[in-house]
Length: 559
Ligand code: VG1
Ligand code: CO
Image (cartoon, rainbow, N blue to C red; front, side, top):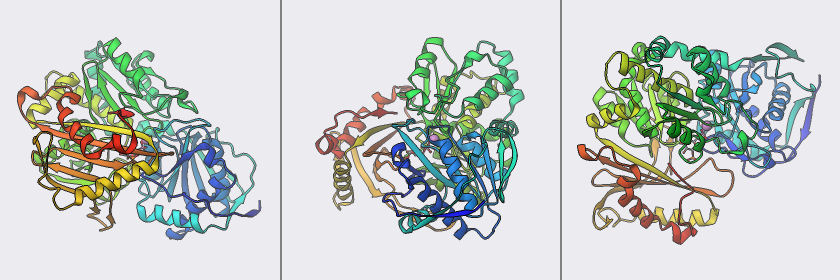
């Protein structure tokens, strides 16, 4: 096989966002577009790594254009001297499964093909994300180097092998390059079995045969993984899993586990009286936890997991809870648990890549984001099924070991009585014309840094600004600085409003408004979040002047 050198010219805009390069499929399908980005990634990997023996994990969430891209990556990677590829069967890896394999196989890194919760199919989104050897998303130093390479590219290299067999498990050689196809679900499920108390969960299920569980993969990558866990390992009936066959276009829906897009699950949970309903997103790193009479916000979910981890979950019984963390817009519920447990607490910018250094340094065990991301240092990505099984483990523990009411509502109620409740909601305004969003954002930025903003009163004088800034983060491990990570307004009662522009959209701008209010009055702990937060939401709308700048009167999604 000969290495072929293909001349090319740069494409504008190949800068990875919060979680890799995400664009419309049509953009990736332009001649050389994908090739350029893949070559830029390999050039960066070769520059940064001190070995010639590059081992690369490759796979994605099964969406449209993934299989072609796996072939492209092998062709270009082999020409750049990659020694070995480890690829999920059919090109499939959930994001957490890939993170796990990068770690266990001590790979140089991994290339993940996903646009996560964004819709898929020929008219929708695709994405390419590079993860480093710890299994986590590449830090900004690496994504910036990849971006720089895309702006300077003049050629890419490839070897034309013809079609690589992605479907037959086993090791084959193509020229000098070894390609190993593995069953990614098997590896992943064995990992979960080392973390959680499956015997306790099984004992709970046989004691409570009426406890109803419903898992919805939203036609995304976790279908086969979920089936293995819920039907094979836990012996639940087939009816306890829905939409578990991965589809290239996710059945035409948003594979995003929230109350708006996971409407099928939400309806079934209510209709069937489900005790634990759960969903994960297209690439399997997000999760939603819901029951017939409660919706667990992601900010609360990670706090509850942290609360019980060291008693209920074998992995944390062994390692202890070293520290906790959340992204800046995530509510402060977990901060209260950290204080109680007397462990370090970190507040990082949005995006999972900021947790990795803390985990590698042995200072962080459990962390989460308000955007339905929950996880721990078992890998370096958020992990949807991990969170769902964590809840099941905790429910079983509460019932069998604590002998306390174990409904999700009861667990939440006890949590709030102990810590108070951080009411939280997020309003998303999607596909705003970019110029409108930018005008609004710069208005907000200059407003909140103006000297007389602190002390101003809003909402009929109910809220007084106590501080406001554009969030900036200094990594405690490597001292790297990340600026402009979101506009934050904190009021004197510790309520917060945060404004951010999304870094994962593929067209226009998405404006996010995060709203949080703490409540400790025992009579006001179980209210509807939207009711409890209404006055503060009004303040956020007033400050942002979103209707004036964008013409929008309603958010696209409320979570
Ligand atoms: C969003 C979320 C963020 C999450 C990111 C990737 O980013 O807000 O918390 O880490 O998606 O999640 P942004 O920049 O659009 O707000 V996933 O499941 O898309 O990898
Ligand atoms: Co995702």
